[in-house]
Image (cartoon, rainbow, N blue to C red):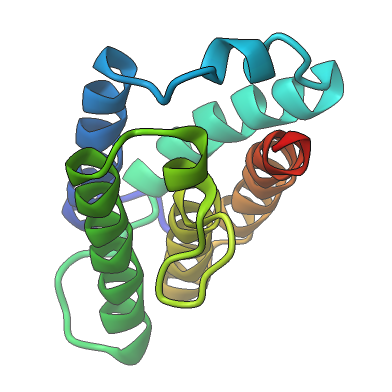
Length: 150
């Protein structure tokens, strides 16, 4: 493990936060109806995972050097950005939010988790890998149940 600041992680976090901030201004129709029934355990895991992923990713020591993992990390995040373009240019419904994208199920939940998991492997950082898994259980779990309600 390396506790050096990562500009790669900072860029990834910006790529993650910007569409989510925009989303908070125009969530899908009926989102509040579904979010009222979220599992408290999954919600706690999601929140804990979010905090840990931010902290451990920013200090994972990965910076810009060409390697396969880093290429995959950014490829996954670029697909995530394209998913948001589809959402924001669409009708902004729950269906739009949960429809698969590039054959990825629940893309708004799975793609960022997978990207940070890959970053953990790139950094050889067990704490970032474990944090990404905690985030994934909570975040993907919540969105899985939202989708199942549809």
